[in-house]
Length: 429
Image 1 (spheres, one colour):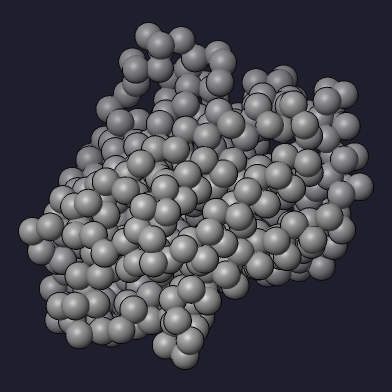
Image 2 (cartoon, rainbow, N blue to C red):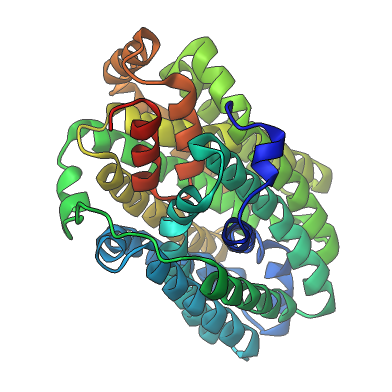
C-alpha cells in the first residue's frame, strides 16, 4: 500500500488508536461465536438450527441497516454515528451474556448487528480524518485492524468460551466499553458530509443490471461461506479452545490473502477470471466438507484452507461491484451490502432446517452448488467486468489505490471517506 512509511504509520494521534482498537473488537465479532456454537447447543438445550439463528439475526439486521447507515451518518456526522454503534454493541453483547435462553441471545445479537453496522460504516471515515500519513496510512491501519480482529475473534472466543459460553459476550462488552470511553474522550467531532445520502438510493441502484448481477453473485457466495462458518464446528467435535485455534488459522489466512492475494490475482489475470477460479476453489472445499463430514481431519483442513480463497473472494467481489457500478460508490456499497448480508443471514437458518430434515452432509453440498451457481451468474456480466478491467489498466482509475479501497470497504467501511481521500491525493480537489 504504498506511500506510508513505517515511522509515519505508527506515529498517530491517540484518536486513531482508539478507533483502530474498536475496529479490532468489532471485526472479532465475525468469528467470535464459532467456537462456542456446540457449547451453546448443549448448555441451552438448543438444536444446531436454533443456534444458527445467532448468525441469522445478526446478519439480517446488518443487511437492513446497511440501507440506512449512510443516510444517518450524512445527517448527524461520523463521530456521533460511531458512538451510537459502540453503545449498542456494549449494551446488546452484555445482554446476550446475561441471557439464559437461545431466543434471548438471538434477539440481542440482532441489536448487536445494528450497532456493528453503524460502527463499521463510519470507523474508516474517522480514521482517515484523524490519521497522519493521508489515505495510504489510514488504509494500512484499517486493514491491520480488520485482519487482527478476524483472526483473533475465534481465538478469543475459544479461550473465553472454554471458561464459560457467556465469556465471549462479556468480553466484547468490556472491550467495547473501553473503546467507547476512548472514542468519546479522544476523537474530535468530524464535519458532516456536504452531500446527504438519499434514504432509498441503495434500493433504486439495484435496478442497474451490473450491480444486481454482482450482488446476486455475492448472495450465492455468502450462502456457502456462512453455511461453512455456521455448521463446520459441529462435525469437528472439538472443545471451544481447539475450535478457536482452527478458526484462528482460518482467519489469519483470510486476512492475509484478502490484502495480498486478491490484488495479485487481479493484476495477473483480471477480475473475472480470478473470481471464476477463486469461487470454484471455494465450492470444491465446501463440497469436500459435505462429502467427508464424518472425517474430522478433512473438515479441519478444508475449513482452514478455505480462508485462502475466502479472503480473495471477499476482496475481489467487492472490487468488482465498484468497478461495474453505474452509481456513486457509497450507494453501490450500501446496496451490495444489503443484498449479500441477506444471503449470509438466511444460509445458516436454512442449513439448520436441512440438517433437521435430512443430515449434516446436505447443507454443505447445497452450499457448494450455490457458490457454483454464483460463478454462472457472474459469467453473465463478463463483458462488463472485462471493460472495467481494461479501463483500470489504461489508467482511468488508480489500480493500487482502488484495490486498497476495496479491501478496506469489504465489511462496509466508509466509502465516502475513501473516495474523498483518493480525490484529494489525485488532485481532483
